[in-house]
Length: 288
Image 1 (cartoon, one colour):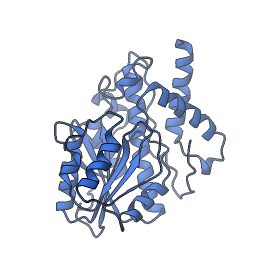
Image 2: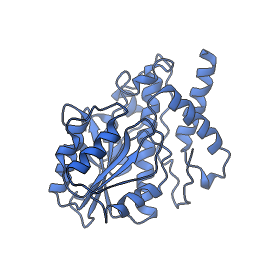
Image 3: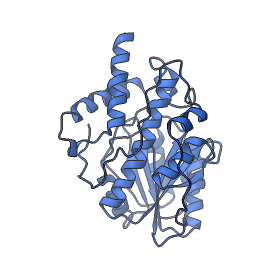
Image 4: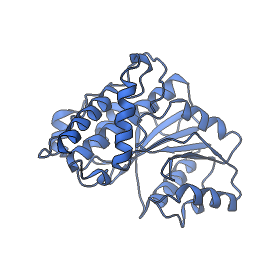
């Protein structure tokens, strides 16, 4: 399932790895700061740049008990949170690689929940050179609509939002999404569970996100129907598996094992996530 990554000058594993936690460990802000001490902050470019497109990574802080809960059990909440943190880092690194490799006109943002003030996001801001945004709203649709509205009001012509549950998503998908926006109003990346892993728009469309039963297998279908009703011309990227259930995790473990057999330059998984998956697979076997 892993997709080949083109060779780059900089390896994707630029940050210290997030360790897979033992069940009694805590990923508290204090521990994160000890493990990943922050360098003095340096100025970041203004979010209003010459770039005409914004790429937004939608992420939750890796707080045990609040992320990847459908994997628990058999994973502990600490293990699930650590895996989620690794996925966030992978997505940030791979979007940076795609932007550089394909010379994409993206300003990169990280939309944060529960708050951009969380130390994990502050570390990501410094290490990954992204601009932080707060997710605001009562449900996922409201939060995405707000981010689209925010960024279109800043003058962007194209805005893309991607989730963090597709750590091996081919880098070419970002180029394809941007290309499709030249002739479509809406681009969706279908997830195998009936949702979507990526959504891109050319203009704000808040009605697109209302009345959708989030976290169900109807999300993609109903979004497409609503887009048609709103007169939005839409296009689809290739389907990809995101990681929500233990079956998804098992499939990712298998894909990671196959990916590890490829030459280094062709591997899709970061060393961090590959190591985490191998260790989790061993732990799951011991608990069977």
